[in-house]
Length: 229
Image (cartoon, rainbow, N blue to C red; front, side):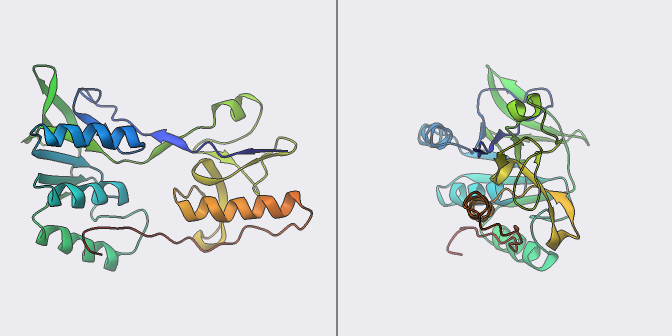
């Protein structure tokens, strides 16, 4: 049997300037080390694109390091994909209390450069936000290319059944890249970008391979460290 647990790569900006120097994702240790070095060298004004867990956790750390932080979110509340309005409002107020500039229902038009490095974020309404660095936290692109090439199905992730099996014989997929019908989401086909989901799917696959099939029915749950919370 083959277990595909390849996760994915940080989703990049598709707008002009998205590949400029000073534009970061937070996916690997190397990403963090590079950002830390830039802050040590004087980076202070940071725009975070994406009001999910990655964006908010980064914002909390940056504020504590003395940076001026603006968070841009295209939806009408933070954490809209992963929690209800009460928790969204709680974290919104918490970040504002720490000095984070939260901007909701905004879209990025382009990034501008000065001397080869990002220097500003231009919004769809033509407003320009000056910055020294940008952090992009807008999810991942699931790493499923080889499975799809081999005949597996899937669009936003590779499709798996209740035992995390793809349609390929003896090939399973788990974690961030696995799209499944989730009973807690009215059987909608979703991906869960969560450590806990990867652990739960791994147990499902192990049980199935060992001859004790138990369908994946785990209740999705998440955690986050922000400030002292």
